[in-house]
Image 1 (cartoon, rainbow over the protein chains, first blue to last red):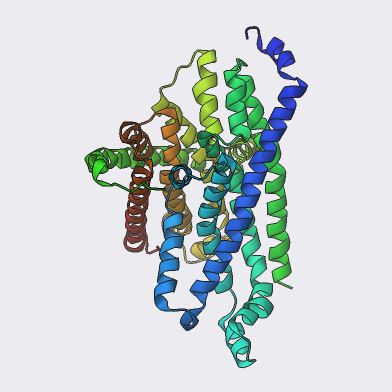
Image 2 (cartoon, rainbow over the protein chains, first blue to last red; image 1 turned 30 degrees about the horizontal axis):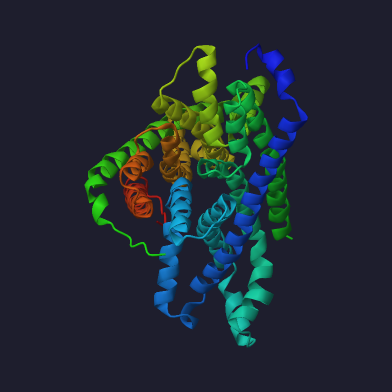
Length: 229
Length: 223
């Protein structure tokens, strides 16, 4: 495709391209949301195990600590490649989107587990002790005493991590997940000038990320205020 | 599934992985240093600059922190040639990572500037310190200590971030892994080993940073 930027722009703005870009945006969102939700649940479980003290054998707690630390120190691209090729070895016919979601979940488990643990640590030790005195089980203590106080501390950084992954999930394009960055590469290969192909996805990432960043800042301020009442 | 993992075939790539890891560390260090300078200027402008300067820095930060680094580098690598600027993969990645780091480090350093409280400076004046002495003994130590932990964390995450240089064909650790995979097809073994190397390298780097912080700056940090 030849022509000036303005001429190309007219050809670029078609219904087909627009829906393609929007579907890529949706996949990016699905990838980050599902990965972070799964990662949050798993990370919460791991943090609860580490916080359980003598109720869980020390070897399990140590193992969890090692897993959490390890997951946070492997680059997302390498995790993607390990998961991708491991699924290939296992022989299952798994879609790349699932590979992407599993990879995001693994990394998110590591990071969100640390965030949750910091939140649980932030609750005053007296609260844990009084729950024991009131004859609460460990799960009851978490459910009725600790989490209601800790979630204000956990939510802002957890949301920040989710926001980071909307951008980091761009690497999933490397294993063939058709998310926003992949769409940009396809449009570039179709012959649109790189300025249009990559420029448009930069704008769309911004449209996705910026309002959420504002929401995150609002949440942070709101929850920080509420804590001082 | 009758595949057995065979690590024997990849031992000959270990020296290559080692050089790759050094390239990752140095790439991250250079981008971090550049980003630190951009961030220092950005934070100074955003805190003390004119209305226009503040707005421009704000746009820069908001744009770079709300778009993926990978796509920013794509843009440098594929769009600039149309404008007559041809970048090698290495320099495109270095420039992209530097600009990206600059945005994040602007925010981090601005928070450090804002954390110096007026009372501290007033107290220094009260005991008769000159302006230079105040900066040397009160403001700088405070800023350095406040900033050291988040800055070291950012450096570590940048070391991990260098893996995306492999996408452009740079021979850092992940790039070396991709070439090794092209030769042997022992993908799972290779990427597991490389993942372990990333863990080891960043653990050593974190430990060194914690030690440096403790002994040189008296900052208490957990690993």
